[in-house]
Amino acid sequence: GLRRHMRLSLHEERGNSCLAWHSDLLTFVDAGSSMKAVQANSSRLNTRSSSPESCPQEINIEIMRCPLRDWITQTNTRTEIKRRFRNFLLTYESPKGVYVYLEQIKQMCANNLASLKVSYPQLSAAVPILAMWTTDVPREVLEIFDEVAAELVLSSEHFPSYKNIMPEVHVRIVDLPILDSIQVLRRIHQNKLVRACGVVTRRSGTYPQLKLAKFTCLSCQALLGPFIQSSEEEATPSLSPGVVFDSEVSTNDTVMKALVAFSCTAGLCPFCRSNGPFHLHHEESHFRNYQRIALQELPGAVPPGHVPRTKEVVLLDDLIDVARPGEEVDVTGIFTHCYDMETTGHSTLPVIATILEGNHVAKCDLAT
Image (tube, rainbow, N blue to C red; front, side, top):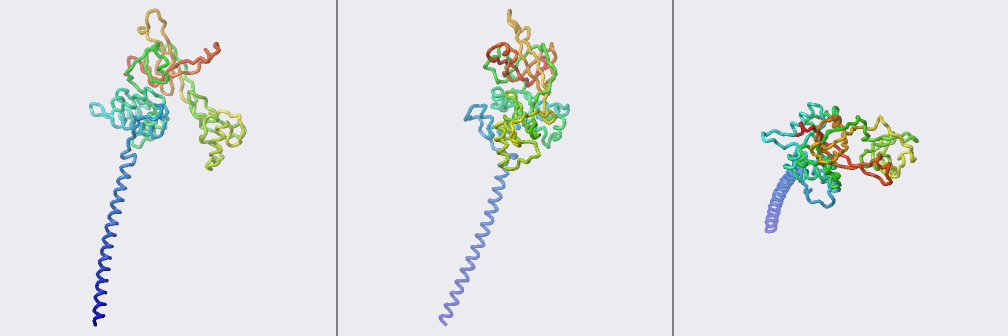
């Protein structure tokens, strides 16, 4: 009887302990699942808050770790520049509470235009670092601005089919505060954004300028390209390694892509391994409008006894035919250089001429 009583007591204790253990386990499981739910919700919230569409993280681009021109070409810097400029276009308000650049985009698209005018004082007040970089390295910064403007115009909230009307959108910088005379433009102004006024004395015709080139290999008839034509170098099949080729030969294989990149660098056709010859494919290549005008100093700005100086201005895309000979214009553009073939022909050393690549042109009585 004593043993039986001890067994029953032991079974009761074990049963109570098992029940307590099971209850503790259920409590632990419930707490764990609730903890997992909380962690899942928090991770979901963190993912949502860290997504670039809802709340993109700001990157400090003011501290440069290399020269400015190289710093802008880095991916993180370009992304941050695009984010800040996009935010500027979307949020800048006038004193009356009107979103200035959203309204300009609507007017631009309503008139089938391709130029979005951005005021330099407004950009300087909202995003000073971008305004400063626009004058220091205008070519690289304006390229990013054009991408942002095109993405904004073609977004689903605005005009997604506008590319069928205008293939590109360009940002034009207006109201640059410093107005330089043509005769004071020197080496210190090279590759900078400058502004000058003058009289148009001569205007050329409109010519097609090569922008994206595609070549046909005459040995195997493969279509190579596109190759970007820049003002610094001539577009040839040997200057752009790693480009995408339009051909019946598939380049999905990694080995084939490596062969294409190596062949391009070596100046060979990636398909038949020959040195060409290569012929420009006019139908597949892309061109843009090109025009030159001669800008002469204003008569009142010429010192006594001096001859008025003239500067060539290159106009591209939708800037052609905006000024006629005899009109006074206000030109904002990049002061750069080019190879002068006529002067070099009479000299033993190469001669470099300076020109203005126009970004914005307006008549002096209409310049804003």
